[in-house]
Image (cartoon, rainbow, N blue to C red; front, top):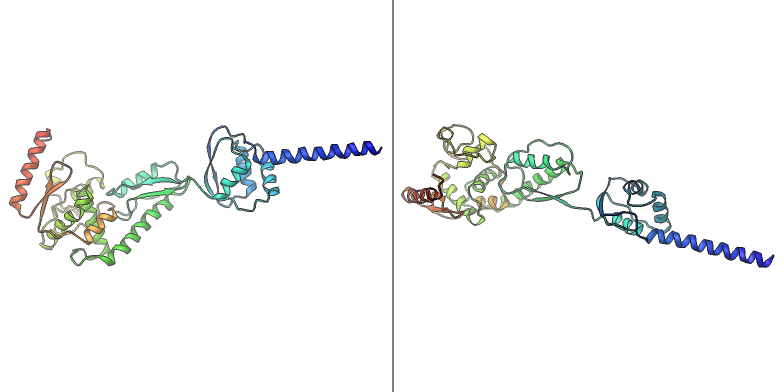
Length: 323
């Protein structure tokens, strides 16, 4: 009897060892996931609801087993909300480390310098990884840059970050403006910067272009910036053709060929560099500029010099078959 009892005890102990070993192995063993996948944990999710999602997506074999093992192994960290990348064959232990580590997937949406707000709106609405609706933001209210977002984040939240970034930039730059600037308010700074941004793609020219327009404003000359003709027609999108004489002569709130001074508002969303250029323009006597055929511009102090530069530009265009 004693010998039988001893074998029963030994068998029970062996069984417990096997069960415990299987329990531990189930925590660290490779999981069932066949290929890397992303999982979105909603804000306020519990470890139980997260485990149920993991089971549904085939990341773990059993939600209950996942939760029980997490409790037994004394995991106290709270799972985070967001999108997480789960590697193929990830163990339960590795999965929980990922969910509690908070290293979520960061996606990016980029707004190029000088984009009008209608194109900002279209880019946000076209991004299927964002949610919700937005309206076209006020022109000049968005700071061009690359912005991180999480999958299913609202478009409104992303747009607010873009607009907050512009507000912060203006608040930082305006107090340090030069005495040579011609703008009288942050709003005027953004408006003139949007014109400067649209007139040159070269950062090295921003302050010089700002200097030319500053001189024209001081002397009461029309700015005569082609992008201000286009803006009322397309809301800042490329025109796709030559500007017509009737459009050059059109009197509206933006066309600087038909008014003296600044248009009523921005014609695009200017970069930080363009705003800085307007607030600290290049000291120059130049009043004119025209394309040089190499991606930049050539500047002139007098109309006579400018006309000669224009003829050179026309010759380049004729050689290219553009005229």
